Length: 160
Image 1 (spheres, rainbow, N blue to C red):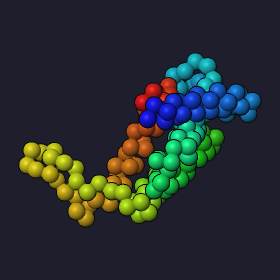
Image 2: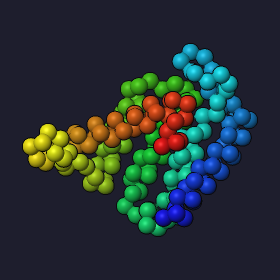
Image 3: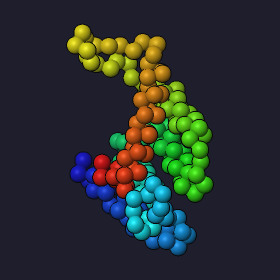
Image 4: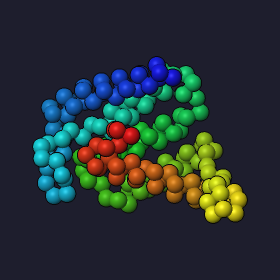
């Protein structure tokens, strides 16, 4: 377990170091202004580094890289859309469609879904039944956007 944590950490730190240096050369940086709170140009490589760390962890730890192929592929697709958005400012609708597509792929190919949401109201376990797919897609898209919002707060998601 500690080896996996160290592998992931070293991978992310190494990726940030290398990608940050490259980002300065190719001008892949966020410039201050408008809604941006930072005062100097900031490299846009944090998400790429996090994905690189997760993929390194998945490929080096045989216990992690099994049935998660679709989840990992979806993560790479989402990261790619994020990079394109940083370069070209993609509107919300195409990004949402890619997020929904990723959520549906995870459900369909991995058969991962929320079947129950627990005892939220104190009356016992609440099963989702036919709404499991819809709830799962909404939850996955909500989770994706929550991380995106957190990452927008000066790269806070890296600390999570």
